[in-house]
Length: 373
Image (tube, rainbow, N blue to C red; front, side):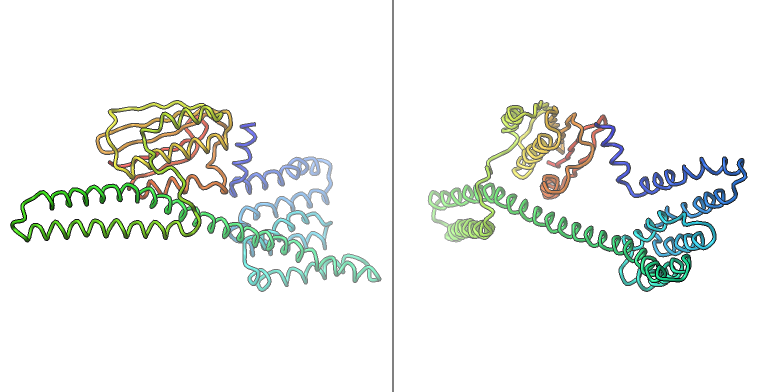
């Protein structure tokens, strides 16, 4: 099953797919051509040779769709008039690529209309004059139009999917930023409250002389309270979109053992390894570590059910390192629809760190982040 998935991933790459397609198309003609030469069958040899001549341009159909479509269509029309129709499949691929990889206006203006006219005239002339001529003319005209139209439709749908994906990604980024803001609000509000209380206590207990010191402490206390009030108003604005605020915000590295245990109970066995001497982390980094591990274990459970995961936290002098590696069959990032990697990247960027997510060195999926202290 894993080998089949790897083959699918390779064929999903345009260059590898095109080379594979060209090789498969050339193979029958390469096998037939020597026998036709030995059997003194010039017609079959000419058809095989013409086919081999027309196949290689397909390698450039994505970068240069117009010239490739014109060249292969010209060879197809020449074959129809001189030998037998033998390049229709190549012409179909090239005409589809014309619509798939270029704009509608360019396809119509530069090649499609002349090609359509040539096919219509060729199809009509290839049959004897009579009632069949009009039908052959219409069929020849529809041949390039239908195939190019199918390519244009596929390109339009792909662009629509990319646009929707971009919108969903942006929405996921904004949602993650709102959640980060709510978590940071709790942290900053706590510190501002402490500062306000300390300044207020100092103002009350310290001597009233000189009066400038009392006024300075009073101004500092009022500024702290005003900042706290404005932060609360900001949080109300962030929650006004209905995104809710029920997520647990008091999370951090201290809760990682519980998180790993919960993952195992949910069917995704995981092991936590701590390297180095644990040190207190800044609040944003502390929450980022927890969220990265949480999302990575969720992705493992969702995309590689039954696999085991290793969670490694490494404390250094200037950074903390987070790695989550599973042994499942997933060899590519999780497909769009869940945006866990987007949220990870947003949190890591907020902390000034770096994130790497992709296939593990021995298979499975690996999430690796470095967060400066």
